[in-house]
Image 1 (cartoon, helix red, strand yellow):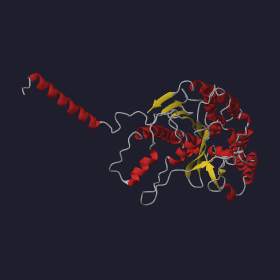
Image 2: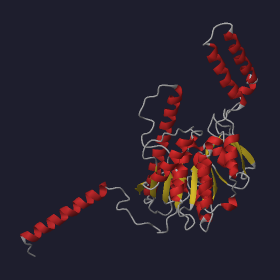
Image 3: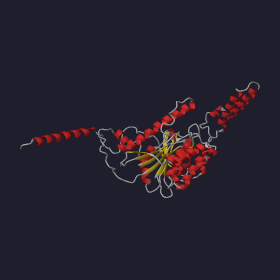
Image 4: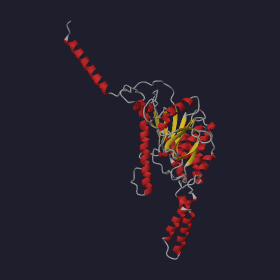
Length: 424
């Protein structure tokens, strides 16, 4: 058979194109092209509220916008909160116009609540320091009067054996009274709730959960299964999960919220009863390890996640610290920023990883870890990030500054209308 020059060159070009396509295909990641969702379904919506201190007022303003049509529709299937975000989440889970209004009342009423009242030994220490300072500005014999007062204040602090046992210098009465002013129960919740707190009995980052509605059983099963790094078919010691998950009930609901908000060294740790163990563990602020629990929400099956953060991008990094408090504040800001960015990356990366399940050549332990972070059915995940468009003037400890609390609340309401959106 005779082949024309045109046909020969055409065949040669086709072969070259096929070879080039094969090489290009080999260079692409295994999950390319991206497949459609394995089991298309309605998105599971979650609201994530981060730790914020007094800036919980900003989150309350955001909630006012997000829940503006709450009497007509429920915008979220569950809410996950840490620290101040846990307090706000408890209001959001009730999902009524009254509960959202109560959240605003709580934060804007902080100046009258005495939230930053020191415990007696700490107040005596402050008084003693004031008297010592005053004594330096006077000569004898007047100086002796101030030194005597300082000595009396030091004695009033109590024996040193008791002082070293103090784990919080601010009285918990103020914040406890505020939260309990608006009593709530499990039965009132219209959406699910996840509270994140740090367990100082077992030294772990734990979550307390309650899901509601027709999908509650499936959400709970998903939440308890994912991120468990154990496998029954892997020889050797099991890889332990990073934290525990316990059910919320009427007896531990409020303690879990207060424990999540107990800033270490500021407030006393809180004992939270745990039905699964029959014991009570000691908890402090969930922000120690999980200040913005995005991955926790994704682990519960959320595919449309709204995240509220109380700091503006780059906030706190404009000025080199010039004092110990600023040094500690800056160090904490860097830690939280890195944790947040890693959580966002992990949440999106886990979703991409779930599209590809070829474990050829991997050992059993690696396969077990991959199973723990993958989803059995891939659906697109959307993250909506709401954060201040400009740095807030309100500090994390500005509980007594009424005007700045109001300004943060108003800014939250405005910023909520323009979230940044990420998808994978």
